[in-house]
Length: 272
Ligand SMILES: Cc1cc2nc3c(=O)[nH]c(=O)nc-3n(C[C@H](O)[C@H](O)[C@H](O)COP(=O)(O)OP(=O)(O)OC[C@H]3O[C@@H](n4cnc5c(N)ncnc54)[C@H](O)[C@@H]3O)c2cc1C
Image (cartoon, rainbow, N blue to C red; front, side, top):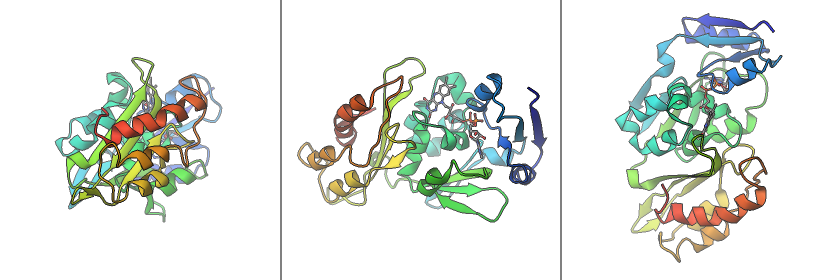
């Protein structure tokens, strides 16, 4: 099958090309897309890419950090300001994949992928678009709508910098090496005041069709201390709102069984 690849110097041109052709897909690192091309997927006959380096920039502005959609996991790992995010970026594939896999592409990766996106969910992430009328969407809304046409060009992800590095936690549970696909992954932002949690955010990856916020867990954490007895109610709510699948990595039953154990480890700071 003939595949047409259109390359543009400017991100705006690529956005226009994407919005004017409903059959076209944006090509970022290609770690997922090129699989489909190599398998001869008929849906992937037109690919749009850009050489615009602005799409790869990582910039701070006050309490927020804007990560360009084309920034790779390796770019994130090389950036000291994003050190709190390194466990999540390092969790994606092996070194070769991390050199190619982009932050933007991770937003579209189907479960059990989406480790970085799970971390973004607890960092009040906003998805920014290139061109068109739609400027920004909260990440949760973006994920709920991402399978819908048309496919907009994501320009970047704006995240909130945690007030303290210790407030942010990430844990990935995997069994298959070296690709290390997620049985599940978990991210939490646990701000505290006077030793008690205030405004917790918790998200899971590979526990639903897309990464999701775990609101029942968040509510159970409000006002508690992060010790064995304080996290009991959150552990009891560990599966509320989750809808894990059975796949080659783990069964739905197994994912539900181990979720409370791993959530407790995350909350007690015993995860890695
Ligand atoms: C061996 C292997 C191991 C992997 N391990 C992991 C893992 O551990 N964890 C994990 O989360 N993922 C993993 N992945 C999946 C994948 O590498 C990552 O999710 C990666 O971040 C996808 O980004 P990409 O740039 O390669 O996306 P691409 O393959 O280029 O694109 C994927 C999809 O996203 C769309 N897209 C990409 N960027 C944009 C944009 N800016 N705007 C609009 N649409 C866009 C594309 O059109 C396409 O539909 C693995 C993949 C492989 C092959």
